[in-house]
Length: 549
Image (tube, rainbow, N blue to C red; front, side):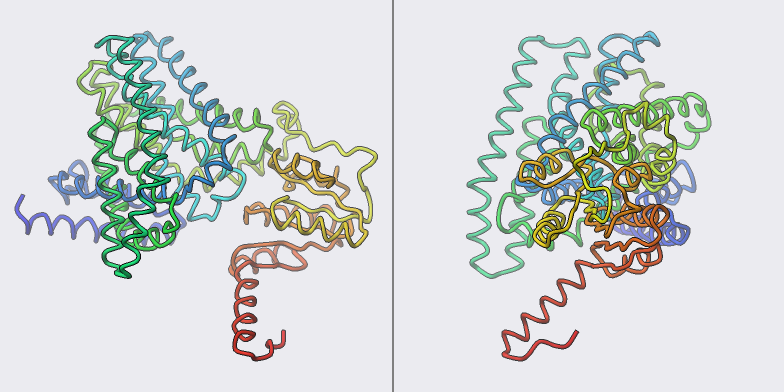
């Protein structure tokens, strides 16, 4: 392809993306789904606007490298340390159970053991790119279900390395002992290299460059770290996407993480959009129509099966039913690393041509449906919360309140993060009775360890509010990180106790109106609080009196 043709097709893809995404956003369809649909329409099997997708795929590979590098930047090592339970327990349970169930189902349909296990590996991995982008756009990364989803995704991504190295074994080639030892050794070396680079090499390199005060040089160095690390890891057989993710983790361990993120965002978003477009171009509409029933059955089994496994995983971790449903809705698809696994297995004979094509179509459709499923998650959770027998079956009953807990004229504090702890401390110092409720078992244990009254539960459930004595409460303070859950909780509180005062916390001023409309007595936004603090401190530094409220 000559240069004018390449530019023409790039312009066509970008123009089609602008039109399709803009139109779909007006009816509430997430942008990721719009980009994938753009690829479907513009690809050679639909309208044929782009005949040769190779150049777009090359740009898309750069885009996914930058996308996964950015995701690694967002997941700083200290944050991963706080998510250790979600990573190790949540991720471990989800991957093991999904792999085992998918492999058992494949064996029941007569597939060979190696093929069955490989299918389990493919299905076990969710889309880090789609899920994190969707949760970030909804402001739910720090919500309880967002933290669980992030932890499981990290574990899945790290499992891709041994999965790739195990493909020759599953295909019947190579020495079993040698391949297993090689997989273990490679994983250890990669982990050690990431830790050394994150702790010593990259921070010193970025600090040296930052002293020059040349922004262009700093950006160039960040891209060097991104693509250099990705290339070096690819020499060891690591996929470009996983290598970029590990490179992001390396930079995230330095003090220059936020500046690197700010410099990366424009290029990342543009090229990452091309990645989703290229995924859509892989979809052959004739194959979808010709294999409609088998593909639909495979897609339904994947979505339903993973949804059930992740829901059970959340409940095993003693998380509320709402958190489990929202996490399952986010992670029930199959992700981009599965394309890497399929590509590695293409020459091993593990999959036949028909099964491979059906699986690829099902993966693409699952990614396309993910933003829509995530958007439906709160409605599914709300409906499930109103089914008493389902809550009892899944052991999602409301928390038990014993006789020592306050039942009237008390303060209910929902969410035991930093804000929740400070509210409990202030209420206790003022001499009022109180009880805290949180969806995170670790937070409940931390509260009880310092003497605060706390129970585990979901404040959006009517039965939970009844057990907490919401109708007789003096005040309810909502400090949870999930804005949509806060709005739902306000509505449930207002139904259960029309006269109780409700103070709700929210991140942005845009959240104030819906929360007030839901019935909140007062809404405190982090955006307004930070602005007021900055103004006050600025005037104090200038020696001017603070402005009146």
